[in-house]
Amino acid sequence: MYDVLIIGSGITGACISREMSKYQAKTIIIEKENDVAQKATLANSAIVHSGHDPIPGTLKAKFNILGNRMYKQMSEELDIPLMECGGLVVATTLEEEKTLDMLYARAFENGLKKSEVKLLTKDEVKEKEPNISDHVTKALSLPSTSVTYPLEAAIANIENAMNNGVELATNEEVISIVKNKEHFEVFTKRNKYEAKVVINASGINAENISKMIAKTNFTISPRKGEYYVLDKDVTLVNSVIYPTPSEKGKGVLVTPQYHGNTLLGPTSEFVENDTESTTKKGLDYIKVNIEKTVTNIPYNKIIRSFAGSRPTPSTKDFIIEESNIKGFINVAGIESPGLTAAPAIARYVVEGIVANNIDLVENKNFNPYRKKVIRMNELSDEEKNELYKRDSRFANIICRCESITEGEIIEAIHRNCGATTVTGVKNRVRAGAGRCQGGFCQPEVLKILARELKIDPMEVLYSKKDSAILKAKTKGE
Ligand SMILES: Cc1cc2nc3c(=O)[nH]c(=O)nc-3n(C[C@H](O)[C@H](O)[C@H](O)COP(=O)(O)OP(=O)(O)OC[C@H]3O[C@@H](n4cnc5c(N)ncnc54)[C@H](O)[C@@H]3O)c2cc1C
Image (cartoon, rainbow, N blue to C red):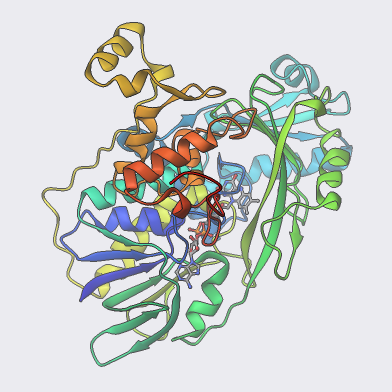
């Protein structure tokens, strides 16, 4: 019997699992996909927002500010990328300038400090950002805005939680939940799990999961955001460039990424089913709108596009509460700024709600630290030589675009919460994330996965279920 069962391994479930690992509770994360964090947490802008934007008094405002303040410590403890680049909300009309003034006041109301908010003139903006559009007349500067790598943030939280005793079960889709006198029975397509407390952190599925057991007064609608990705040899902007927000959300941004690429997007469109693919309409919308804030965009440097869907709640705010069924906790409607808010939400859920259901006894052996996979191209020549001597696989370059070695790939496979698919390797160490998008290294990564996981190469998946790359043997054994 588990003390706590978390449904969903996105950034929300990941941070909750790490918080739980600070206690001697038996905790498990149940994930329906074959890898962690493959939904909203995989496909977003990666911004740790300052907290200037949410409506004061909402849970979004509260947890955005708290989460932003927690990211630095979390990134140091877990070795998660954090690029403290700052952000600029830019205005192009008198009307938008008025909105900027309103946001300036709102930022303080939400709890930002004086050093964290500043209004800039057109010339000051131009000096900071040479590629800013001439239409921009004024900006709100937000230096506490950062950019992280969301997938690594989720993986690092889960890996650290597992190092501290939490369990993870992937390929486990929850299909029903019942409550007996003392505990819950959570049924997946393959197994039954028993737990005293169940936490619903299932993103766009949270309404369906909640309805399996509890009275559910909210709906969750997928709201898709599409993006273009620019190659990493382009330096278009130095900070996150937000247009002035509208009722549709934060608008189409230009966002520098930690690994050097630049994102153009997202769009904002409610969708029924198709939550993850890009469309001509969406990508055209980006091109039309991006030019209002930034110029000199090198469209010939686009290397790919992608989309993700926000779990937009009918309540217009995060839903973080114990349901009418004692011990069943909804952490739902975690749309933006959910990536930012996740560490603060997690602490509140564990200390403020789980603690009312079970006794939480401190885990005295909790180790808050986790080191990322060795990155050869971040080491000095001496450090590289040391490694080559110990293990020659760190001298064997597999991904030429990103200079990723066999040693790094093997490490990413064998850790807790390790890679089991080609995309899993790409997401953890960036083999295949460069200009050729895996054209050269994919067959090598496939061979390494088969060898290290001791499976037939025919069984190696590209990403999701049923995505085997090799279809049949043509010759030999
Ligand atoms: C386009 C876009 C841009 C964004 N930009 C930002 C940003 O810049 N900054 C920011 O702070 N936030 C941003 N967000 C919001 C942020 O990405 C989300 O708030 C966050 O990722 C939500 O995490 P989650 O864990 O709640 O949900 P998810 O990441 O969606 O995870 C839910 C998990 O539950 C699993 N699951 C679902 N059903 C079941 C089931 N039946 N059984 C088992 N498992 C199940 C899913 O497979 C998934 O792994 C953005 C979101 C989008 C889509």
